[in-house]
Image 1 (cartoon, one colour):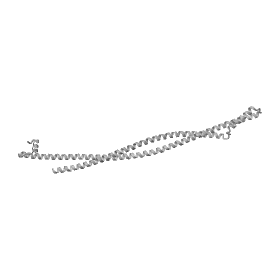
Image 2 (cartoon, rainbow, N blue to C red; image 1 turned 120 degrees about the vertical axis):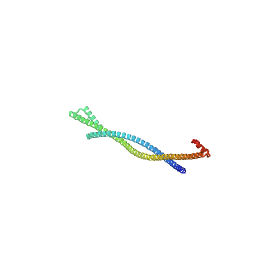
Image 3 (cartoon, rainbow, N blue to C red; image 1 turned 90 degrees about the horizontal axis):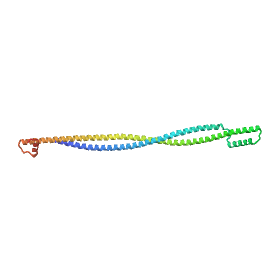
Amino acid sequence: MADHMARAEELRKTIGELKGRAEELRIKRDSYNSDARRILERREELSLKLREIIREIRLNKGARDELNQSLRELKAQERELKRKASAAIKALGRGRGARLDEAGLEEEIRRLDWVIQTSSLPIEREKELVERVRRLESELAEVKRQLSSRKDLEEIRRRIEGLRSEISEKEGRRNELHARIASLAKAADSLRAEIKEAESQYVEVKGAADTAHRERLECLERIKSLKAAIKAMEEDRANRKMEELERIASEKFKNRRKLSFEEFKILMEKKAI
């Protein structure tokens, strides 16, 4: 009996130690779970930032693509204007020897026309003047063509200069977008690395929490098992005590000795009286 009591006391001591261990594991588990939640919150914050950066990258790429398309169109216009400028320069080269005094030629033609129409000239002289007027009119036509070509060339050059200015401005904006996209891409890569690290940390911390929880359940199950063992020992001890009391009461009853109330009650319950 004493051995049973000592064993039960030993088990109760073990239960106390297991309860302390279970509480430590609960605190540790809850702490790990709290850390895991913070890691998840941090991961979500990083994911939101990453999605925003990706959205901004797409917007900047869209703007850059529009600029590239516009630049292709502007450069095509520039090439066409350069072609026209080259043609105008060639045309001017063909008439390089012509005088460009348009007003003087017109005045000379009018003067000769007036002489031809108002003067009585020998036929040969009149033919000379008429031929002179024809040559001057041909020269005047060439001068006008030359002047027109020069004006056209000046206009083409002005337009080319305007296109170059616009192209330069748009190329500058495109380069800024390139730099911005590169910077955003670098930030996105950094965030992806942080997210990956957070996920790794979460797996590690959650695993530690699960381990602590599993060990706590093992402690609780062990406590339950020990309590059942103590209960079985106490029931066995009570049964043994009852059996001993019943034996003593039965002997007293057989020997007609005086029974205590407890002994009388036991024999009554066993229907031994």
